[in-house]
Image (cartoon, rainbow, N blue to C red):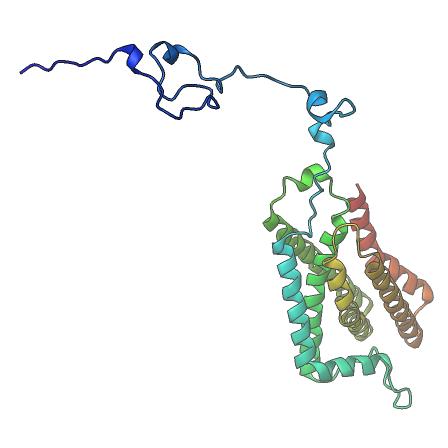
Length: 291
């Protein structure tokens, strides 16, 4: 069976009643009107920035756009680690509040009893508290190292570091500080064995650990606030850290001098101890950091 196509004359394709000329084309056009191009499909035209934004506008290169420099400390991984340290510090104070009082009591010792600060601490609980405080203090040293290094690392290098690497840098700095402390302890013990002054070296080590624990207890809250400040801010907290650290160092130097004098050791050896054991590792790391 075959089908027959039916064609309508072109003149029958007229617009219905009520047609308006508002439209750009007829609703029902003729066959010739179908060849007219659609008005919206006009050729693409480009315009300059002056034509769009005005004659006084200028183009800024993308490299000069201020999109904000990245920071080592402004990421969730590092800030979460700092908050974890804050919680650990709070638990330390909660469970060892009596040991904190004992530590402050050793700093302001009772001179009537004749007990010196560099005497060995009594009780295994207090010794365990000192070791725990030292471990927390090493982690805080890693945090302050990253916070200080934030201003030294170039911006182009910051863009290539993932957020997880910041925590690795903090822990690496803490391990480096622990290695330095172990090296100082080894040097002191070797000196005590060679010079037959083991008791004197043990008292000196107790004195060092006592004031390091005091610095951790006193400076940690301010250091936590400073570590969470945005880049370029927190100058007031940093100044407070410097003041507290200066006071702690002054008290430590005074007590070490009293120890050397009480043992009738020359002050020249006191200077040699400060330069060779205390200052040399710090100055060496400082030179490496600024280079």
